Image 1: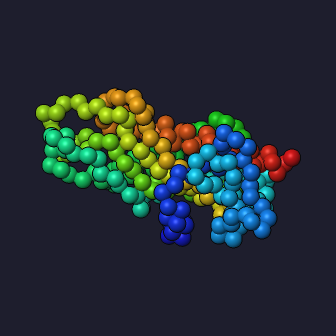
Image 2: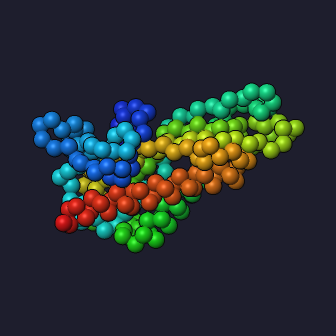
Image 3: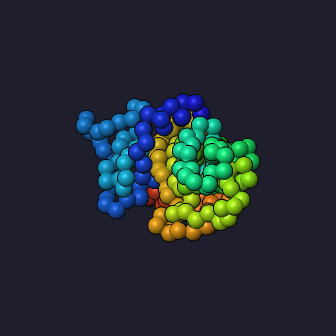
Amino acid sequence: MIFLRRTFIAFGTAAILILMGCAGEPTIQTGEDAEVLMGNLNRVDNARSGLAYVDPEADYARYQRVLIQPLNLDNVEIVQPSSSGTLNRYNREWELTDSDKAALQSAYLEVMTREISEKGEFAIADTNGDDVLIISAMITRIAPSAPKEDMASRSSARGRVYTDGAGSISIAIAFMDGDSGEIVALIKDARRGDHNIWGINNSVTNMAEVRRAFGSWAMRINDGLLALKSRDEG
């Protein structure tokens, strides 16, 4: 996991397309001028935002199942929300507690498993195998739009807090061959919840937005993998 973390950090902060989903026609760079990462991952042109890298030589058609690894939260950058007036009671920093991490990991696994299972294109695996693609994700950055909903962070006199969405969350994902462990794709993406829609900011609404982000990523992952699989089957 340290190796993956270093690889993701090398990407910088650019938002990376979730696999092949984009407005234009995606094309994997080939030839001598191709931009290659880690020796086997070629850049995808016409990505919606930033970068996408896949292994053009990988046989995606053989992947029938996906193994969803636990969400990694070991190296999350927290961008502190503004704390003007009495919004942040004691100017306490926003941090991920063990309870927060457990809730995020549980939501991620539940949503990813449900969305991919319901699509019906890929079965969920619980062990490695030669027909298995491993999905290894890590949250890289969280930028909440308000202090946490607890007595140590918010002033009780403030009452309800309204914000323009819950904030933003960034994720990085490696896709690895279930037999060799070789990375066959790398992506990074960021989502901001309910931008331009003001609403109540609390633990319930924030988790709902996080779950929607996980659901969106799961659907894009499924569609992207299906596109690669169809390409190789054709």
